[in-house]
Image (cartoon, rainbow over all chains, first blue to last red; front, side, top):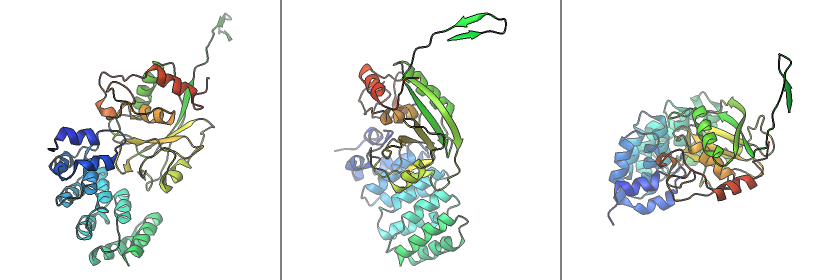
Length: 150
Length: 187
């Protein structure tokens, strides 16, 4: 089955997206998801970035990484969420910058995506947040992430 | 009701009771495509076509930076996350059978809104990327409405950004469901 942009939009346009259902589009959706992330449109790019993480594909990391580089925090937040579904090496690369993001919401989601098996470099950055973040709540979330890493 | 004017003349007016949903607007992050007022006005316009009133009971800004990107899990009615429970605990001014609406930046996973709420705390969230009709759509869920297919209806499941022939419609059976909700007392 050929997946069209129309198919992808039909899956992602609902106000409440069913990502399990949308993931049935499979890896053929990836080029369209990349195009939607690159639109940098807050109404659709975060959904595309997240779905790229849900769908297991060799192209998932590239789409999620593109979202992680967005100048819109809402798109970076989706990248941070999607990173939790990537393989450990890919997740480490995506989360590397996001755990020290200037936006507290991005940091929160990036820290929540940290799990065992991620890179030692990332562990150092999580430790830094656990010690130096201005928000006590964020320091606690980083502390929990650090415990998952050890 | 009789009212005496400043010139001493007496006026009378009869009001009929209208089923009305009362919203309490809790703003963590303001929406970016439409203002909160535009969303409320859009909702009023649609609900009025079926004789349902929309009142704003209160409005407040909430400084909760770690809840404005909210974990909503699967967004299933009756099932909520720890973060939703935390957020929906902020119920200043919200009376029994009234609805708290939280305007947040984003949901995890990303959606335009979510109407899942814990028992006894009718609530929904609307994200900053929502359409003009998302507020009315999410409150529609809170009042018991389900998704439908026609694209010119408020509850269309294909996304309120894609609504055709706006303002969108509510139909009689939806009106009956809304009217039967304890959240639309006649006032």
